[in-house]
Length: 279
Length: 337
Image 1 (cartoon, one colour):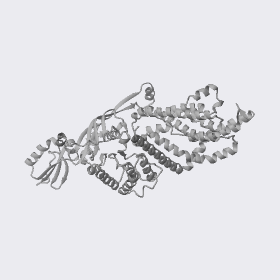
Image 2 (spheres, chains in turn orange, purple):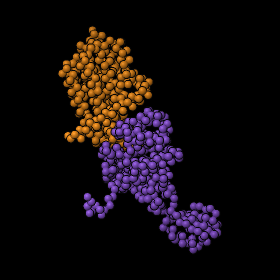
Image 3 (cartoon, chains in turn brown, blue):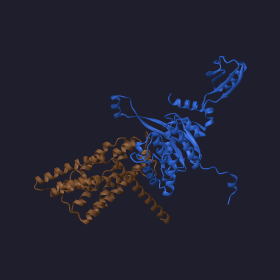
Image 4 (cartoon, helix red, strand yellow):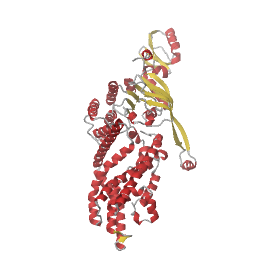
């Protein structure tokens, strides 16, 4: 590659970084405009993990303090970190894609000299710091009530901090690819429901994966769901070796590359079918 | 060094927009109303092909302002969407500034804009200034170029007090003006304007027209404009393209639109005896004292004129093409038939 080519690439990356910063900032401003609504929405989102948390800690207490070796304090840690990971891996859903394609709302994004996926990534990334800030007092209350067992090393904290963004990228690319099916079918909600069912079972969202049968764990290992949910939680809460932590990050990179490639490939054919209805 | 050949020929500028044999067909699902038809459609789905744009061809030179006219559903917006890279053509060729729009290359999208009267591309909950800043990052506009142009556009459209309010709090006309500012920050060389004055009051329409004309002069930008308001077309476009049922009916100077599309002419006759009945010569569409205005079929104009001069006591006689507004109204009217 020539010196000019390298300089051009560096310039492009710098410009893209600047876009992410500006877009993230505008999203933070937008989220603050609706802070009360955001707070109530987040409280609604907490119902799911709190139900799991109460159920599993109760079962653990009834079985003498642990279920298959997981104590109630470890369940508490698992589901409190679960909430944080869940906030991180909320992305633009296929419902959103369905709406933007059916209503012609994608037109504005298509007119810009920037792939719409960048806008989605930057907007949701900007939304994260605000919801995490909102979540902190809730997390603190849950900490006091459920008394979690959590004693991570510095390396585990570092891997967790990277892995939550890896989870975000995996889920964005996966769900965007699903969302793009709307270019062919108009309604993609049914397929999204299948995704949610598979994710509930194979990601560690419903049940920590070690509690699943061995065959289910084997299946989960070769699918992307685990790496966008269970792995970041396990990195902080579990007791993974350095090799397992770095191996997990490598698996995340693998799925990011595969799913980004898939999303871009599908996009290439999908966008030709856009009919820009109404807009 | 000049070669002999290049000194003999004048180089024509490359057209800003070139369209040849362009087609767009939509496949539309179709079924009768009712439960029985709904159940039937589960087994056998019916589709109908709708040809929105049918083998159109034209060229637009750099700096031209061209009106793109036609009734609703004629294919105007579909064409603009294909030229701006939103829609993939079914067949045919289109190039804009040397780029194939459907490839949606960065270099292409950075040099065009599409403004649609009913579309919002600004951040709804934030002041427009924040959206402008986002556009700066998207279009990679250097700060020293961005700030003066932004301020200049804000001043030209007189939106200084609007750009600090959340976009959701602006009226339709106010929003349209800030939309236009946002669409031009990257200084596009080709503007596709789809009903840019729709729903605006007369003063606002006039201001936007003036602004478009000014932008075209200042930056030698090429403009393809659709509008249902004749005032927009008359004020801005010397050339118009009329499209109907996806086909081009007329492409030429606005002044010659009547020659080509109007099937009649008007004859204004000043009579010595103003009460004469002229209904035998054509449709009487006006009478003002001794002056009678007739509408006659274009091919009969010469014969009727000769008869009037021979049979009536004529003081003066003028033959005119119908007003542009009437011709456009006639073409638009066909869309509703």
